[in-house]
Image (cartoon, rainbow, N blue to C red; front, side):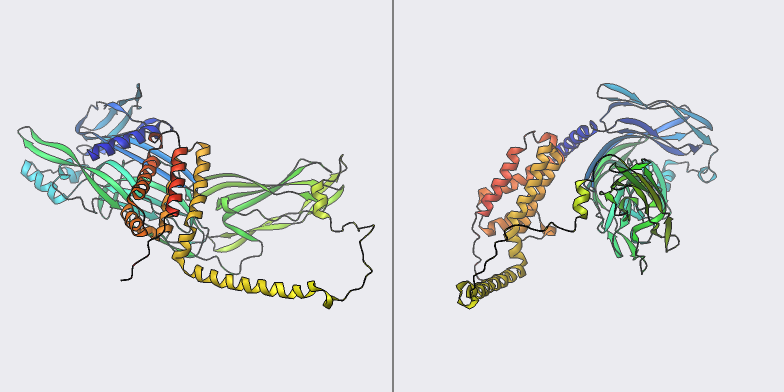
Length: 613
């Protein structure tokens, strides 16, 4: 029953997300195969839920198995942005029976009341492979041959349900394009799924973390259709994630492992008078990826004075528009950096404008493409300015310095000086310019309120109070400061005292998401506020934070059973709504009020004094 509910929930989530993304129906197949060999054809339906799949007939090939349906769903948050996708894959296994060209017709599937089809294509069948020409003739010899070969991705007979699925049969691997890079130098991270079995369901439960890196995702859709050889064995491979990483610090940085819930398809084989029949069965596994480490080298010292963090290969061009320039009329000095490297993270250089110019904050326009192992494109930095005086002026020559990882040296691009010919225009100096350049204030005139009376300071009580009051204040501040030091030394006490304030700030973020109507962000912020508050209030480390520990610590704290159950119920509600916000109802205000009320009630509970042992 639990499994049926999980499948139903996954189907609902997939359907909702698919409605928001582009729907496509494509085919993935090899271009060439050998006569007598087996090959896979996978029909991929992206961002939709289909039914009534019809596979094409292929004259010249025999269908061995299929269609095998597998579904996948992925959702990620990168640099504050959320993205999600889903897919249904219909996999067919065929055997080529003759040489020549196979004409594969269109497959079709029903999607939301309409019929979608793939494009027909052809596969070239080459002469048979000599290594595969000699096959066992008897069924017993064939079975023994399969057992000697082990599990094969393209042979259902070897994927029998009585075999244990090992880490050599299915695993997730994190691969780095380079083992050693400099700070801010791009390194490509690829996360791949290797499997010898068909996958019917794949859900990430814990994504790898990229601490110390800035991330640029490379858009892609995972598809289990490629075949690779790893350690001498062949696997079906799907690229789960591919991104460009820019290290922000030197040293050894590690990408932590991720956890994934995977359902693989095995087969129960039955011998009949008609041959061996295979019945697919599913097995649920938990797969954990490896960790990957990259050595980050610091940029060479000494760094040039005009180096602003650019790492890669770049060229620079400058221009001014409009021309000719006139006083009191806006103009723009454009500074365009083109090349390959950390373009998005280059700081705007300081331009030495003449003091007769009213200069405003620069604006940046990015045109980059995260592909080919690094970001390429251009970044245009526009410096708006307004000439305040007519005449001839000059923006002095300078240079743009960057670090080239290929040569391992700092290189500079010279920027020639830019002459400015400013003609007289209509208008008056801007207030912005006057305020920036005003260094002399007007002298105060009139009655200054000067007094001619003579008094002795020692006779005034205010003179002595000027010594006594500061001394008292200093003593009070010293006592308060020492108390604060004692309290801040107690980390658990500080976390407990600040738990409510931190939770209130997070609830404000949830209220902002509610105002935007973003249910996914609202429930994510609300769940973060509740988990964080309970971790701080009960002094539970984040690594040990679960519902059983929370309930046990609430009981120790002195919270009654009713309030304990209310707390756990709210956590369940938020977790459910985070993965299926459309099923949680449209009104988010009551859930926010319930969380705020629950935190107030927990704050009013007096902690039970710990009895001595």
